[in-house]
Length: 363
Image (cartoon, rainbow, N blue to C red):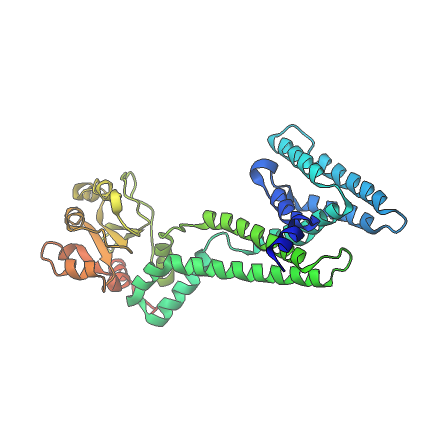
C-alpha cells in the first residue's frame, strides 16, 4: 500500500479519533481527566452501547438517540462551578464538535472500553516506586556474592529498580496490546481495514506510553538513601534518630550508636559535587559536642572526589567509603595524607557490626 493510500485510510476514517478521544479523556490540564472516572466511563458504556444496535430504529435515529444519551451523561458530570467542572464542560464542547455520525460514537465508546479503561487498570498494576525491585535484586546479590560485594549493590541500586519497573511495564503493555488485537480480529459489527486496525493499535500504544512516561518521571531518581535502610534491615543493624539539637547542612540517611554510645551518621550519595563545602560546616568540634564520632559517606561516583575534598573533610572526621577497585580508592588509600580518611566498601558491613558490637549471621 502506498503512502498516499495510508494517509487517506487514516485521515479519512472515523477510527483515527481513537487516539484523540483517548488523549482527550486522559488530558489533565485542559479536561481534568474524565477518563479516570471509571464510574462515569462504565455508565457511558452501559447507557449508550445497547442503543447502538437497536433493530427497530434507522441509523439516523440511532445516532440521534445515542448522541443525546452520551452528551446528557457527560453534561451532567460537568455540573458545578469548580475549576474541574469548567474543564469538563470544555471537554463536552470539544467532544460535541467531533461526533457527527454513529461511527464517531462507536469509536468513542470503543476507545473508552478497550483503550482507556484497560490502561487505567494496567497503570494500577505498575509499581509507583522501584524499592521492591531494588530490595529483591540487591538481596540476591548479597546472598550469592557476600557482604564484601556491597559496592555492587550501591552502584546498581538505581539500575535494579529501573529494570524491574520497565519489565513490569512491558508485561502490561504486551498483555493489553494482545487483548486489543484479539478484540479487533473478532469484532465484526463495525468493519475496518488493516490500516484502521493499525491506527487503533498504535493509538493504544502511544497513549499508554505517554502515561507510562509521566509515571516514570514521578518514579525517577528513587532515593539512593533507601539502600542504606535496606542494608540495615538485611543485616539486622539498629539505627536511631538524629542526635537531639544537632543542626547541619549534612544530609545524613542513617544514624547508629556505637558500643561507647557515640554516634555515626551515614550519607549515601552518588557524588558530593558542589555540596562538599556545605558538608564541611559540620567540623570536628561540632561533631564532638553532639557525641558524633564520624560521618561516613558512601560515594558511588567518586571521579570528582578531589584530594582537597578528602583531606579537608577527613580532618573534620568525615570518612569516605569507596569501591575497593576504583582508581580513586587505590590512589587515596596509598597516599600518606589521605589514607586515614578512605575505607573500602568491602569492609563496610563488618565495620558497622563491629561498631555496634553484634555478630553478623548472614554471609
